[in-house]
Image 1 (cartoon, rainbow, N blue to C red):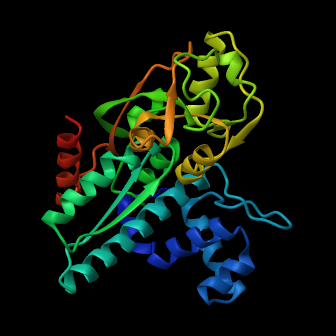
Image 2: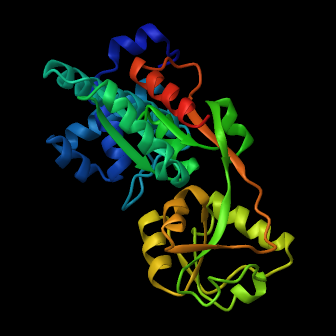
Amino acid sequence: MADLNYSSFNNWFKYRHLVLLETLARTKNMHLAAEQMNLSQPAISKMLKEIESILGFTIFERLPRSMPVTALGQHVIRYAQRVLNDAKHFVEDIEMLRLGGHGFLKVGGIFAATASVIPNSVIEIKKKWPLLSIDVVEQTSDHLMEMLSEHTLDLAVGRFTQATQQQFFDFKPLGPEPFCIVVNHEHPYAQKKFCQLNELLDWPWVVYPKGTPIRKRMEAAFMRANVKVPLNTVNTMSMQTFLQIIQTAPMVAMLPEAMVTQQVEEGKLCILETELILDAQDYGILTRKDEPVSEIAQTFIKILLENTK
């Protein structure tokens, strides 16, 4: 197609085209995509050629064993994912409302948020709308923003990790996220008032995986303290794994204070004072920029803001 405009796009583009694009991007295989769509492979191939012919560029590379998405095709796939996710949410909402429910809310949060502020806000909004169905996802900020872009979340509680992200998301700060170093109450250092970081390197650590924003901040803090980063580590993203290991083994962990407050109050964990300085970063509510927010999401945002005053 020489010129692609909104009118011509509406005339030829069909919902099944979106399903094909999303399925093929996920499977990277024509045969598997045909099986999942219950169509023949020639029919799938013909449909894809029509789409690419009308758009004027290839969406998938044709390799012997795979069909990866091209650079330009990534934009098409993201559009397909957004529309399909919106359609899925629409059907779920309508069905829930038809049965007398109050709709759906899909929320994502970083680990500090899912430890306290999100659960407390979920309890409060359920008092207002008892039949509201709520999905809560726990992930890193980067992953949460990917999910927001794909429209699989209505809102998220996290933080910016790159300046460019501010172009795509609005941010309402909730407060700082302080970290602490903890051991269980039976650890030999549990009763020490102050520990040198070098002393703690003799023990295994439970930490976030390499490449995550929190791990990067931890490594930078160790560099500023002129201390080597722990090498004997267990790397995990799971809050449950963190807490289970640190409460039952003589190990060291650096975690958001919100995640361990209850365990510290119950005497299961002890916070260690060290020379490590990890500046607290603000986390807050992330929503897609220049897109309307549903009444339910607006209410949940208001509750989040009130609960962190």
